[in-house]
Image (tube, rainbow over all chains, first blue to last red; front, top):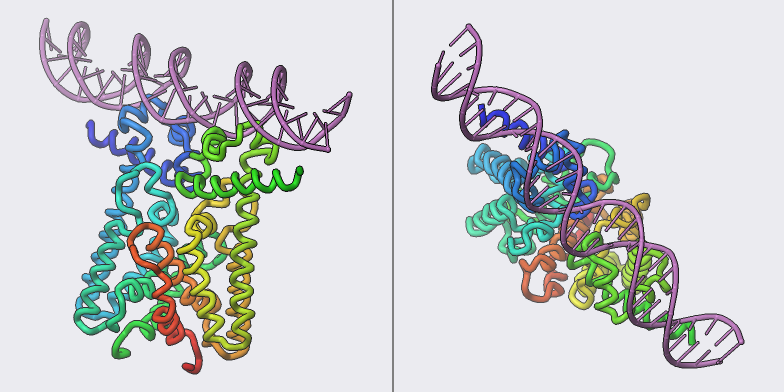
Length: 196
Length: 196
DNA sequence: ATCAATAAAACGAGCGTTCGTTTTAAAAAA
DNA sequence: TTTTTTAAAACGAACGCTCGTTTTATTGAT
């Protein structure tokens, strides 16, 4: 029964920490508070994670993996329909923001530098790298306008991230998924070679 | 001599802290390190600021004020030329990012929650509020397309902030001011009613 | 002599982490 | 089946250290 129990406790720590790190930042989060919040003792936490940094690394790895899979499968499901692929990127990010805001906030705003000083920045973490490569391909294929990759990717990801940010800061109260279509239309106007 | 000396010391603290807060975050920055970095003793720092939080508030107020003035004067100088007004917003933000990266990073990324728990989020701080109002006016005047303010403002500010973010995370090595014109052109395509 | 300014020393609280111990529960032996 | 053994899992007090802050002492200009 080893694995089951381990997973339950690890999951408890995961769930609590991702909220705690987002709420007050990594530095302000303390093992004692994590212990209190999870019902696991300080010693128990160290039984599963060798250090506080390791907890954050575990969170970071799992969170990026989860988001990457969502994005990947969305693009694959759109199979060669560029509009649908783009739509899936927007919708999935908005959807995850609504259903799992702490996960997205952790990826977007918790400074990975705090616990992974030598790793690449979060905005070039796996999901974002994947999207960037998707965009590069579409430029090569002549679907997107042949502008600097920096421009194109910022025109696409910038507004998406901005809306997520506004939602997280409480400046949007409603469900941001309703912005999927109008945002998609506007982005397409600025980046597609031939409107579809 | 009180005022002069006070200004010099306050300025020293300002210059160092804005870098220190950005580099490691507010929580990781310590009074002792600020003292060492500025050459002012811990007691000296407390002579000018009653608490660590007050330092951050001072930084926050001065930084937002500085950025607001830049944005304001840029828009005013464009006098009724909407393209130029938009260009000034983009250029000024890119320009400040290049010449004073810590200032911009402080406004964009240092969580104000850390030291101003009850204040509005930074993304609705004075400069951003000002820009938002500018956009609202342009929509009312029929210059910008009549879309939801959330969509329009995200189409404008999103890509700008995204490029700044990429620069700060080291994913763009060159001068981002060169993106001003091409970004402006692309944004205009998506938001203007009548191309100009 | 007065007082702004600096410097240094000290305080208590809270931090990440360690460690000796206890609990739990499955495996082995009777 | 009952008892003994074993090892994983969890506990929580304690350690050494750094933190923000305060106090105390000293300097230098007016």
